Image: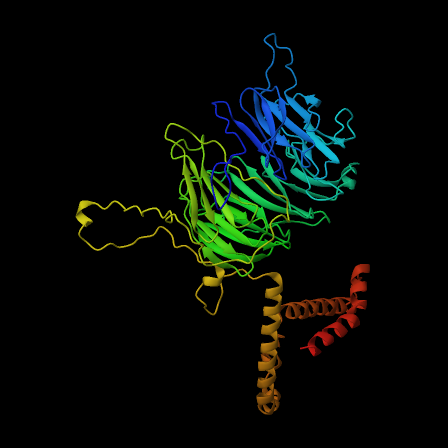
Length: 569
């Protein structure tokens, strides 16, 4: 255990535990407890005093997790069946932290979604069992308090925050029926009518459901394993928005290609998506799914909001070079552009000031280590493990919201002893024939700048929101009306003469300047023309249908409406 910034020294309280089998570690949500398995026992210690609180004899534990209020420690071991094929022993244990007693054991075959989910106050705990979601109340695991039974429930997510708890469930489609995500409020599970919201979609082999912090909406990333069009190696993704008030929408992303990452802002009113074929686009959207700010394109595939939500980091990790862009989200200004090459992991410190990036095994087995940064771009600390060793996991000690107050955003890089980790730009290979000639730069594609750094031209490429479009139309209509009024005044004298000589058909069609109004006028004239034809048919002695007679009766009302619209010009 290492002390955080500014000292970065090894903790003297916590005794380092060395061994090949230390593979599972977990902090509690408030950061007060720490548990790990060393291949012999699972131990729980108090983080500040490093006092050993509990020890469990579970040598093969692979996963650990504390419940939100530290009452229960859940452990999972790989499931094994007996040699004669009979069912194995329960491998998911729930232990009471205070007393150390085992509250319940379950058989949980898959490692995926192994851990039961708790509401933040631990009043409800839920787990998915054979297409049903079982709910337990107040950590009493002997009686199932409630069941949500839907055909083939594949996944569920409980909402964060205070009661009442809401549940988002996903049911995959089968035999031509679409997949759907439904939102329920616990414990109202009686049929489709009791759902708060429902969104169905085709093209989904798996979904990721993300609740916002206030539990008012869920973002659903639906993805298929294979892109039928052959355009993408990553399959095909779509992004859906579902609110607990029943509203839902497909988030329109202006660039085609994979959706790499979607993240809610901690303020619950905005979310950021990173999407599109490389160089990827990143955009912040509001709850109407309208774009608020477009960051242009760049080498990135991940987004991370700081715990207070005032800073957003866009980064390109994995198969990208580790470039990061740190943005002040309030003013949409770029703060810094550090580079953490070969990173496989990124996390904000709960203080909202520091960041850790790490290179971990088994994703990368060389150059393992971690770096601590300040968001202004300064590298404060760097640690590399010896060549013969690997680093598996790094995690900050968590803290509850409110422990660290939000600070004003700084733009000046904080001082650091270490030089910046700027990688040397790799020289492109040049064939011998071109080596003494001037370099001509040829880019595969031009990066699109963020919307507030675009050259200011008359026409903006930014997709306008609905309201902006409406206002623009109104503005244009007013302008047109003014110009018309001027033209009318100039033409009045000449027109009175011309109108006596000019044939009727030459009168230009008057337009209001508002396309909506023009459309209505055109439709009304069309209807009146149809009525004239019907009248002529009636005069010629043709027997009219009932609905045709009704049409003729509407003539006066239509004429009145047309007059009103034309006067309104």
